[in-house]
Length: 466
Image (cartoon, rainbow, N blue to C red; front, side, top):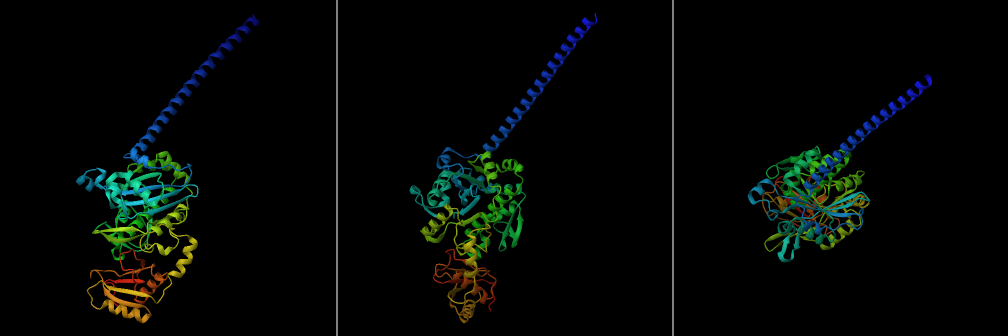
């Protein structure tokens, strides 16, 4: 009996264990199935999230634009991207409608992106640059957008620069403020104060400061703040490049885990052929970018010319070819700091010249020189002001003559120099400022003033004589 009972107990124990195993197995299956369901739901939600971002980013990207874009030969090769700022503000849209033909590009920047070497180059193309648009005749390049939208703009810039363009991004200036505010503001350094309350609503002091969205937009739009220097569009373009570099810097310095959410917010302000995944990949490739030294900046070299009752920026073909050869080779656009006449006046990206050449050049070419030819123009109602300044300069060793400016309403004195006349023009301009007792930063002649003299001075009401 004891033996039989023992056998029965063993069978019962075995059956009990089997039942427990089955229950555990069923429980495990339930857990696994639930986990798979959760992961599938999460995956579907993430896919929807990414697709939603991509649909926002690509809104307005059509087949004609995609057909103009040329992919790099290798996935990790440097490539060019066209960045446009469009004046599609709410007021203009309400008045003229949302059709692309009603808008022109306010900012045109050709960007070279070099992932292997972690370098970015920003080259502004003046919106008044004269180009041949075939059936449309001679036009300013920003008209390409109204003639044929983004695809025609890519075609024209590609032809002008002689490079393939692989990607495109368009920024609506009306939405620009949200980008900067999303980042918590951007830090810029202004060499001179920028006051343009009438046109851009800004009054910014000299020095390093953090701008909110409205201030950054005002800085990117302001050109009248530089009327005293001539060629306000060039100084505005320099500020635009500085703000873009500041945005790049702010993004790359942020926590990478915040990038997906950041891209989601930016998708409401930017149109591009790049997907969210591609943007994240680029950001990861550039997370170690030296933002102080490896973001380069420049502008297409042009001269202002009045042709058929219109002002155009005419490209200096030789200088432009040299600039693009340097850019293509991964070098800075300028070989010499004096080539960037906006330096020291408008904001600048940290590095716009080779460190080797700039250190040599700036230490010598900006040393005061007390000789050369100078044209002094009276831009005020004070009679004899130019003559008295000319006497001061003649006694100092310059060959100076006096004349009258185009108006008598100049409030600040402007000094420009012509490097086409002599390599020491900057030094001469520095000497002129010193001898006249002016705290004015000389700038290179943008083509607005006479190029028959080494230095041109336009006296404003701030000059009281010496």
